Length: 449
Image 1: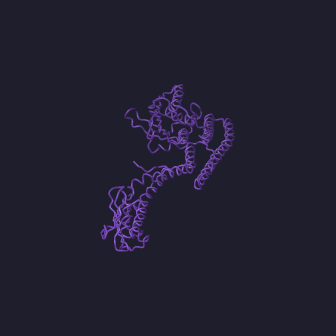
Image 2 (image 1 turned 90 degrees about the vertical axis):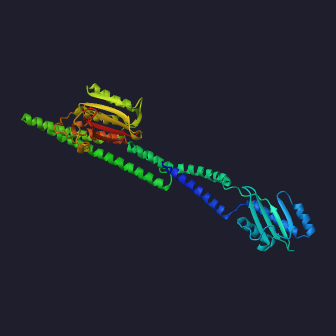
Image 3 (image 1 turned 135 degrees about the vertical axis):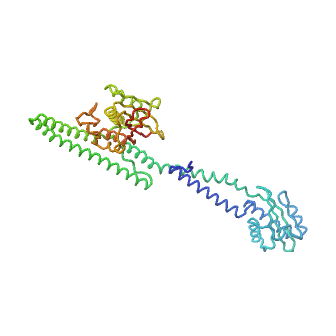
């Protein structure tokens, strides 16, 4: 399982968290490397107390001892002696060096006249011994109990939330604002891939997001113009061809030979159907129909009922219980299903529809027939317009139950695939193995959930 977030917002926040953790880790490592044990405020207080005691020790001996005795309390002990309590060359560290340097500067004492020893008992308590030589050669020995620095986890309990939470809140709000145009672009691109018309997106956000949005709007505008120009061109061609076809039809009626006249009329009728179906195919753009939510189960039942009303052998099986809401262009999707069922009944005697959920909760619709199937190397070729594999299937102008399927000129599968792909889906053909029932052809529609 990948722990790194996939979204840009998640990755930015993750990088920010890593940066904050790294900053705390670096600061902590520097602190531990320095060997600091006494809290900085407590250390300064210990230095000040020791300096005051050293000044008192410079008084005449009797007065000095009396003053030092008066200064003693539970946290500090000050005594005059001939020898220091801290041995020379005792273990040094960050705190010892700082105390020696500050006392030497404050009291104008050389380093050899100051000896410091620190013994830590636990996370909060320790003994700080400082021995300082007085001008008369005696030693002032002090014992203090400074406040030790907290354990490394304790400051992090405060610093991490205080430094992280406000930053994360601010960054989260700004990241959402920055990524809002990208999310809008994602949704718009998904809708365009399903064949919907999308209004131009507002150009907002950072410069990079604005550039991508402007490029998307320009692409969509060019695509729309291309489709309109293509449809307009085909419409003009179709209109211009109707006149010569009609003229030839009238001339064909003047031919005396009945067989020749019938052949000519049949060819002209075929040309008329091809022209009209080509124009209808070009105009059959899914974006002309609004997208809305329907019950996909009910749509399949309507297709089956219409086929049964014509006396065809069509059945429906569904692995999905209850209603199945689905957002699509129902007329367009229904036409694709009707074309597939028409082909199955025409060339395979019967049609068996099945609805199920595929991988990733995608929807799959199977249309099976009991026909002879199609050669494997021809499974993709049949989707091309005007391709008909069986020469015995004459182009006699039979356009099916509604005159829209284009099956008589080899446009049925091309239209069906165009409709399915306009929904962001996929249409494939495959031959069934025939182990459970007679081998035939299976049309598989995969629709995004």
